[in-house]
Image (cartoon, rainbow, N blue to C red; front, side, top):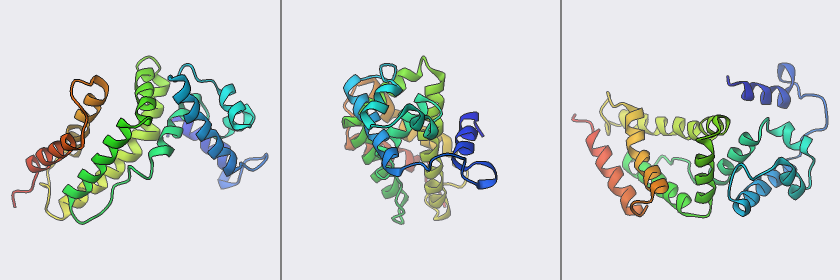
Length: 210
């Protein structure tokens, strides 16, 4: 378990599952902090320009309240972005692997092209010079969705839609890597049609021959 996760779990639950001493955390305050973080990121345009002091002031909470929820600014920023996209990026189980992946890819494209895309771009740019931010992005945004994607692909294998020996990591990187490339490099437009082409091409290449 990463050290930041262990520390956050200890602060949240205390020892042996008991809540740590102190005032119970307010869900209202937590949501206000996340909203303020997104708002200030949009206004200021970058991770390094954002301060915990500014978030605390905008959300009308203390800095101590923020640090009880999040061990670092990186963790806060990534959680704010992740919370804004969590429901949209969930994989559905429609009974068709192609439909499950295609629908989710469309939602990824929609988020990347929305104002939240600028926040994601700032996170990825900041992560190139801030390992803590990149680690928080992987741990708190990328991996939770990656694990959900594994389950979706495994259902496809169970139904005979994918070859049993499919390398799931290579397939996922091939599906989503080009989306990130168009999002960041902007050499071509990022569209639903592009996502459909990727989805069809990659799933056909890994289809079960049985």
